[in-house]
Structures are given as structure tokens and as C-alpha cells.
Length: 428
Image (tube, rainbow, N blue to C red; front, side, top):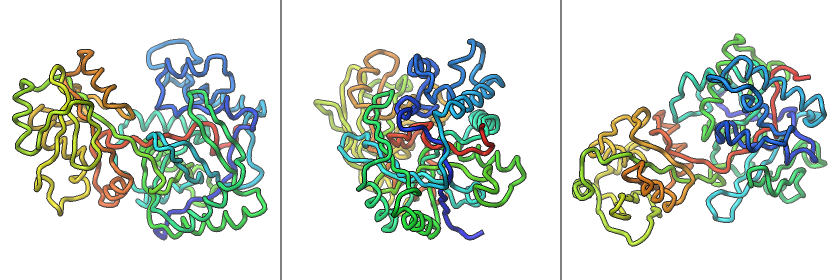
């Protein structure tokens, strides 16, 4: 198989224009059960009835992962299709999807939704940078198998491409096919269906050619969904062919050019100082960091800076000393999240495995003041604020074959669920 990153148009199940605002739901892993139930209350057409079926079942131990829950997801999807709330595209289409960037810049995150090949994922054309957990993989595999559909897209990064940019500019210059200025959780999005308009044949051809020339795509968010999709394909004996012939071999993705992606910082909280006093920790950090007290909250403005909030001792700005990160260090070593782990969390706070240590917490998309308030609440002793990991960093680490530390990136906003469903088995 040629090393190319195909992204194909497909006949998506999508909500009608009048139902879209009610159908659109935050991704399943962004809301917990209580939040999902609150958002779906009084909204029978909410896609949360598909992605979080436990909200409609009697309470019970691990209800979300019961056979009844997976079956309820299938039934909820079938009900939406049967009622005409979701309808299939007449033919294969791409979707251009845009949402306000979550970093407060006033910009827009925009990308293209299409189908990615499970075979190419297995071949390493779709590159990853995180480990997956067996329990989460099994949950997603069972969900896909029982529902007979991929109901949420994976978020992928692509290297910037002039051909893709030209199509995005042309498509977004026309009125959107769907414009939701306020979704159920307060977010917003617009989308354009590419495949039905007078100029769309050329746009579809241009997008197909652009992606077919790309050697790689990179998972930004959705490692478990990507691997689960490949596991489903494995379980069906690796059927070959396109989306019409072998739909189980393809899964939906929102592909965002790296220069259009919005990444927020993923900060750290630690429950105790590993037996050190605040003064002792600051003294120890001075070997690798220049430590300066700050009169206000610290959000690092560049790589190599970290903010530290110590309960009762205020904010400090840490600036890494020259030579601590070698110029020829591998991409994963150069990440600020790796630097913090190697020079602070492990040697001074005793957190050698942040994946499993209960003393560390992670918080994405929040302000430094939010973290300080959490520390002042008493559960945590300190907080570290970080500069966002860049999309280029994500691609460099994935290309090197390395694995990032946990919770290294927070891509936002994530695409809403229920807007472009790919059926592996016809629902109705």
C-alpha cells in the first residue's frame, strides 16, 4: 500500500437544519454522566442519548459499559433516523467545519471532515503520540460494533497545504449550510457540505488529490477511537475496499491544517510537596531554573517558562537555564511537559509515573487564577502552568515514533457529535 493519507468523502448521516442545534452534543468524553443528563434533559433529539446512553437507563454499577447501554445507543440512533431527525447525504460529501478558537484570540479553527482508512492507520500513515488504555479501547470497540456506526470523528492534524487552503477559502466564502451560533453548552459552529454545489466537483477532486499526496496525518485527539476503529476492522477480517464496499474499514475524522489548530495548555496540580517545605522546593529548583516571584498569576508566554503557584507563598515564574535542554534533544525531550517531569515532578516531588500516580492532577483549558483557587481550596499543595504544546510539536513527536507524557495537549474546541455519522451497518 502506498504511503499516502487518503481522506475520502462519504454519505454522512447528519441532522436536518431545523434539528441541528438540538442534536449537536459535546463529545462523550468531555462531559460526565451528570453533565450529560443535565444537557439532555428535555431534549429528546440530543445526540447525548446515543453517546451517553446510561443517562436513560436505571442507575447501576458500571451502567455505561453494560450490554444494555450499547444496545440503547443503537436504539437511540435508529430512533433519530426513523423520525427523520438525521438524514443521509444523497451522495458522498466532505464537510468543512468551523468553530471559534477557544484561546480567546478571535480566530477560527477550521478543517475538513472525511473518512480515514483503518488500513492506513495500521500501516502508520495516521501517526499517534499517546498510549491507549485497554478498558477505554474495549468500551469504544463495543460501542462501534453494537451501534453499527462511528458517531464521533477523530481529530487529526495535517501539514499546511496550499491546495487545501484554496478549497477552504472558496467554500467558507459562501453562506454556510448550517450555522449554530449557540449550541446546548454555549459553543458555536458552522459547516458547509461539499459535494452538492455547482463548484463542488472541483473542490472534491482537489481535496482528494491534496490528501492523497500527503505522507502522514497525525492524531490530535481520539487515540482510543482510532485504535478502536482499527480493532473493529481487525475483527471483521480486514475487508479491503472503499467506504461503499467495506464501510467497516473506514472511520470519520476532522482534519485540521496545523496552522489553523487551536491548542490550549494542559496544567498540573500536585497534592503535596514530597516532604519538602515551599522554601526547600524553591531552593532545589534553582539548579535548573531561574526562579522569580511574581506579583500576579503566571501564564507562560513562551517555551521554557513554567508558572508555579505554592499555597500560601504565591506565584513564581520558572525560566529554564541554558543547556538544561540540549539543542540536539529529541522532539519529546524538548517539550515543556517533559522538562517539567524530568527536572521537577520526578526528582523533587517523587512523581515518577504521572500516568498512575494519584498525587498529580491535570486541568486543561483553565486560567492560572482557576488553578490558584483550587490550590487555595486545600486539596492540592501547588500548581504548575504551562505554555501550550504546539501542533508542530505534536507532529514532530509523532513522526519520531515517541510517546508524549500524559495530558500534553488540549485541542479546543472539539467538534460536536451527531453532525456527521458514518454507518458501518445501515441503521434503518
